[in-house]
Image (cartoon, rainbow, N blue to C red; front, side, top):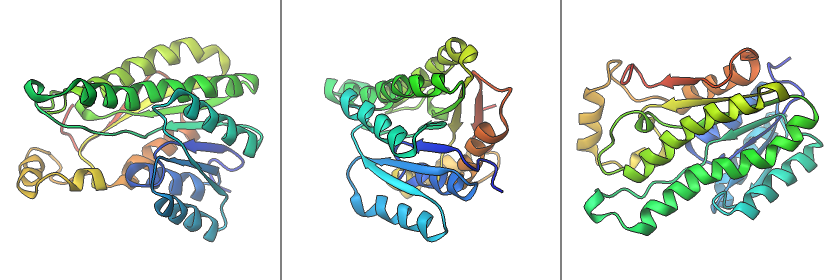
Length: 247
């Protein structure tokens, strides 16, 4: 029997990168999985097919989590399809990198609205379902760049630092409802998003990582599984998965 057998999970941004790895890992451990995605139907279906092909259960839900009504409707649909919702992983995020003197209002607001407000929209929609069953596991994917300076990412860093602060307050408020809320702060991870970084810059970044390599998405997924399967006495905490880059 899997470690989350019989549980249901919703993963935002679940069609690619870290979100995809989380969806596959939770499905392997027995959860019924709903993956949210914003635009790429084919990528989302690939994940769903891989899960169903291995005997698991997966549904896909297209929604822009930066839109409050779409985000909340997505949570409602997942809870309705599965009749309950046990696990929420707020993973979806975007970047619009630029140095501050050139960063536009739109670039700043879009990133903060999607990454941070989207986390709030989904969490607030999930709370009634989890409170009603006196059980819930919420994991928010932040970033090491929400903890340390990240040149060219004032918007992204602000959103990810905000997620860390949001997690602590949510944990304090929901602790008596049977809901735990934690965050994982990955370091540089081998994803499509990071592939866009120029090779010479990747080499420079890798040189500053004590473990000498980037994280694999599956390593982030295993940290999520630990929190939702074994972290019954853990709330309001952050787990850093960064190869020693920030201690």
